[in-house]
Each structure stands twice: as structure tokens, then as C-alpha cells.
Image (spheres, one colour):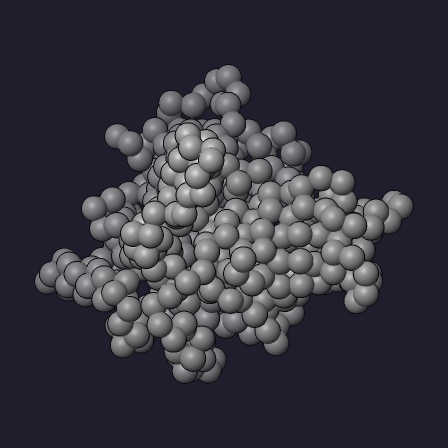
Length: 245
Length: 188
């Protein structure tokens, strides 16, 4: 024992959720919960950043390795054509949508004050909003035929994705698992979702900065707890993709 | 001399990141040429599989393109450390999404650095790395080993306990004590 300040008899140290999150030791449920908290709790987010900063120098020990083929042309092609992917753009959009929200609120308030008058939105405020699309996007996940099984919403500003059941199936003794499928790529698991209530999760990074994303969301029926293989193993019961509202 | 080179690297990368944040694709290419071997090393070490790692590396640079503006030099983290963190996060995300936590493929094992620290030469962030190394060395060896393994493999407590052949409670205790020790050591 060389850690002078921690003798073996020292009391059990309390959990350090931020440190454990950064290390990656939390189980799937705790990890998802912490990921969500990261988006909503600034103090926790700051603690996570601090741990990332503390531990990141370890990464520099990794031996350099050259990718076997030159990936640059692929990366160049995959970049958004304009800067619509930039943080600044989304910040602008968020500000614009706040402005729209404020304008709408003004309308409602005015409306209440003068119930007999038809109030049109203040034109200046609407004209000032340059946003062609909202940062809030919706995807309807449907079976091949039939009603919408799930509705997914993407809140880019807060980086949260919510999946709510519509006419969702609830197969007995099985779980429903959500996947995202990039164009030409393999499905990536986003986790098991309940059939009877909404699930919130951190927005997958793949959705970053894309207005009209080609990424497909799909729900498959899997053994309880989710696919054991990391790939969909059961039937796909609903699929869809995001478009601007 | 070495420290001059190091400072120059740091300044160059910081400038490149600023240009990337401004939408300069040529700056991203420059950044790619300078850093892809380091970042690929990080991703391969975590994922094991090279072709999957190449896939993730593309993601890493697209993420950098989207997020370069959030690099904040005033936080005292060197640009290469920030870039390596982006690479690790993407690799860990991938590892989690494939539901993995399995053993890495054998053929990749040879590519993966063992846990013995390598000499870090000519990196502008050598000071950060040395400081962390000294603090890890000050920990109980089992705590340090558990932290290293968890950090690079992104494995849960349970998988870590299997890998280290120790009871779950013991492994949790190693990690938590280790984290507390590191925190104290690094803040002095």
C-alpha cells in the first residue's frame, strides 16, 4: 500500500458518480441515467468534464497506429456541405426558436388581455427568426402497415431524445429494443425501451448537426433485457426517421 | 529545445482547432494529418478490431468538425488531450452500442499497448501525462490497475471483476479508493 493517505482500514469511500461515469464502469441502466443527467445537471456535467481532464492524459500512452487506408477522403465527403453542422448554427437556431416562443407567448398574453380582438403575431419578431427548421424534430416509427407504434422527438438544444409509445406492441416475456441505422451501416443499439411509458435518452452523437437526417430508427423484439448479440435478432416492429416539424 | 517544439505543437493544434470551428475543411485535413495516428491508436486500443476502429475514426473527425468550437484552451487541457478524449468517447460509445464487453479479438491483442507506460516524447502534453502517472504510481497497484483497465476497456464493474478475478465489491472499492486518491493527488 503506497497510497499514504488511504490505509486499508479507511472507511469505504462514497461513490463518485462522475468519475465512475468517465471510467465507464457503470452498468447500462446507471450509465444511461448518468448520460441524461449530464444534459440536465450543470454541476454534474462540470464534474464529468473535470474527470475527463484528469484522466485523459492516460490516453496519450497509447501507441500510435496508422489507419490501414487513408480515411481522409471519406471524412471529407461526409462533412456537411455548409456549416449547418456547427455548434454556432444550432445555438443560433436555439436563440431563434426562443424568440419565436417569446413571440407566441406574447400573442397568447395579448389574446387573453383582449379576447375580442384577433391578434396577429408581431411581424418584426417573426421576420427576425431566420430558422428554416426547428431544433425539435419528430420521427413516427410505424410497422409496415398499421398505426404509429412510437413517436420519437429530438431536442437538439438540450440534446435529449424521447421515445413515447403510441400503438406500441407489448410482446409477452420479450423486450423492445431501439436501434439507429446509419445509411449503408449496421444497426447500433440505443437500448431497451418500455411499451407503456416514455423513455428519455441522450441524443446520439450521430444526430449532431444534421437537419434532415438519413438515419433510420427502428424497434425490434428481443429477448428480455435486449439483444444478446449486439445486433437485432427478432422482428422489426416499427421504423421511421426524423424530419423537421 | 524540446519544450519549444512542444509549445509550438500546442499552438499549432489550437490554431487548427480554431480554424476548424470556423468551418475551414483544410484545417481539419491538417489536423487529421497531425493527429490521426495518435487518435487511431486510442481507438484501436479500446476496440481491438482495426476495421471497426477505422469506422469510428471517421466518426471522431466528424465529431471534431462539429464540436471544435467547444475546445476551450483556457481550461488548461492541451488540444491533443481534448482530441484524444473525443476519440475515446466515440470508441466507448461504439463498444457499448455493440453490447460488447467481450474479450477483444486475439489478432488485435498484439497491437494493443500493454499497461506499462510508454515514454512520451515530444508531446506538448507530456507534463499532464507525467503528473497523472506520478499520481497513479502513488496509488495501491491494484487500484491503479483497475482504473487503467476500466478506462481503456470501458468495461462495467461486473466485467471488470471477471477480468481481474476479484469480487465485485472489492473491485468497486479499488476503483472508488483509486478515484479518491487520484483526485486528492492531482489537486495538490
